[in-house]
Image (cartoon, rainbow, N blue to C red; front, side):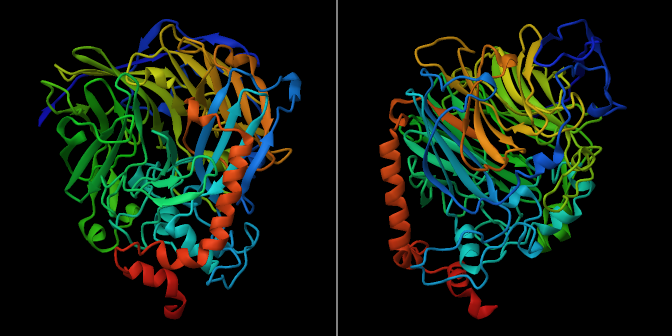
Amino acid sequence: MRFASVALSVICLFDAAASWAFHQTSSYHHRPTTTSLAASSLQSEANISSDAPTTDTDMKAYSSAYKTVFEELPCAVCKASGEGGTGPIPSDLVGTYFRAGPAMFSAGSIVPPKTSLIQPKSPPVPDGQDMDRMVLHPFEGDGAALGVTFGGDGTAVARFRYVRTNAFTNERKKGRKVYTAMETTREEGGPGGGGQGNDFPVPMYRHHLLPGLNKKRKNTSNTRAVYWAKKLLTFWEGGLPYKLDALALSTEGRSQLGGVLKEKDPFGGAAVFDSAKDRMLFYSNVQEASSSKLTVYEFNSKFRLVSEAGGKVEVDLPGFALLSDFAATENYSVFVQPPVSTNGMQFLMSKDPAKSLSVEAGQASLHLIPRVGSKNKAQRTISIPFDGTSDADLQFCNAYEADGNTIVMDVIRSDGQRATGKSLSWPWATSIDEYSRTASKKSLWRYTINIGSGAVAKKCIDNVQASFGVINPTVSGQKHQYIYAAVGGKGGDVAPPQGIAKFNVDDGTKEVWMPRGYEFCGEPMYAPKKSADGEDAGYILSVLFNGQTNESEIAILDAQSIAAGPVSRVPLGMVVPHGCHGCFSATEETGWTAEEIDRRAKLADKMESRGNMWNEVKSDFSGLGLRLDDIEEYFGDFFD
């Protein structure tokens, strides 16, 4: 493996113009300034462009979305509200939007069916009534999936169900919190995570370090929903994905992807679509104190490993590889590994992230892993020069090869230097001051890498607080012009995701729609218009929470006119808590009718209620033998 020492070029674009008026399009392609960040953090650079609409962010409204969903939504036909002069659901929006996220913050809040052999001793209670049942960070909440199908007939069919993970089932039966291994990390935080360990909305420390199937590592399956090859999966960093029925969102069980994965494999929580080759890429990362083993898998459109080289690439990485996202170009999978030191004794004894790991102030490693079938490409590791701000936990928007020797990657970069790293208690952040002590400063950056020389240039594209950067998936792994992101309502200051921005990375312009102070958007998702071409010839969908009406809706924006705001708003009739990542499938089979979805939902409910007694005996044993975890799950009360 070749390591290169590189020179650093940091270029920040700035704009001295006044802040935008509400709903205005702004340009920030003014003269570039070369700036050294060695003595300052991203947060302190007030001269970098962050002009955007601002609002009086209602943090009590924001935090009120972190409420447990006590009643699932099997199937509901929804129509546009017409609120604010918006129109009907566009007829050329056809397909299904899926999104995953945490939804249970008071453990064991969905009781088992009455036919269950085991019933909880304590019934569900409202959030905050029993703090012993409350999770210490929203990310610890049990995962649920949202599905919204658009049929092109002016209606949308919504459903929302919890993922029936083993951990969910266990706590459901006991009516209490069972998994507490991450609580030390959530309570203590500290400099070990560079202020990002307990970051909002998604922390850098995502799981306990004890590997395999155990009571320390709670797989909540709450991080990402992926629909690929007619299969719907939900993901969580460090455990197997779960397979769901795409119509009813009922859980079919843990997935080993057709035998590709072993039951104890620590699968990653990210996925990358290769639009040119029509492939989906995933990874697993086996972490040890002094070394890690990374495996990158490539699946074809039938969800089978591609034929070349067994469909996977395995490499050894030095040290403890703290990874949570990646990108893919034509020839490389791209990972960024921050410098991490391990406390040998704590890693051996407790394996608690906050006690065992420390993200150091220093150069991160950029790993270029040759993809399956890439010819004459060697693995390369390039050192990213340290500029005073960590390159840990980068959120990739996209990466591509500009020429045979240059890789460009656009990312959301975090600066946690002013965050304490300690998680607050539920409802977590009811003021901007509280939120800024917990969440990191996030902004959009471009890294340009010369593969031959190892030179890395960092450019701050825009300093507005940004999260959940996405692109049109048809240009994934290729040159893109537009990035869409959820942005805060305080310009360049730390604030929760609230509005939607569109960044034109070619000409340096951006446009932003900012909702009212009590409304908050999540991750934007690109959905193509039927029979339309062009990188921005589509819609942007986002789950919007209204803290005044205490209801969530789907906001639909025209991707070519973001600043104009939603063209349609579709109330869901429930609160969908702030979530994580999703996808939109415009394939022909995902245009299910309301009747098909309702029929499947009723069948799923019937199977869960009638089959529960059998499933309690069958689900985890499956001919694999009875594990100690299974004994504790089903008969644990005898050992309490």
